Image 1 (tube, rainbow, N blue to C red):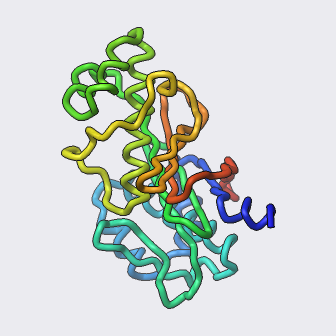
Image 2: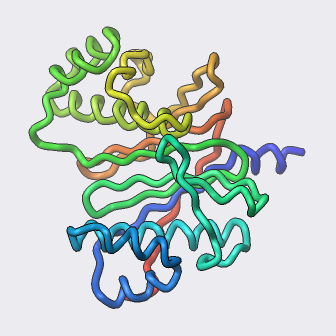
Length: 236
């Protein structure tokens, strides 16, 4: 029973590079169907096109590892909210979400609960006090203003990624007009403890710090067991 409980709350998270070369693009393209190839070629920017191919193919390979459906046979649909999902005809529960910032992507998968993930590299031009006053709750803004300059940036992005991950788990996508709900306790703002939102039964967690980067994951559950992994591309 304990093992079953643990598995039901398990969240697998992979981080990987989006830096591409022709060999890598050719390798990953084999896992995409014609509609996906068409979508990739619709991007005029070659870097954006390469990033889309890599992230889509890695997502399908990870779903394959969890469901035993061959990657090139996996059909992904897009909900009205813009969030991708597994074709319901597969008759398999597999919840997933993807986010990328600069040349880094992250994918989260849960076999039981809706999930969202977000990663953001810090922008040097960000003004935490100004943005938090505009978009965050009064308490969150006050906490950010009380911190040192570097800690302000850290706290701002921790909160931003938590909120975006939560919106993605819910399936609505981030809405700048709806960010003012309070997601912190003053003593919690700079650590990675789970934040359980009891009324909506969502759990939000900031992930271990990266260099000038914040990321967070949210799941529709009162707890989560996180398994962090690095995805290594099979060819250089």
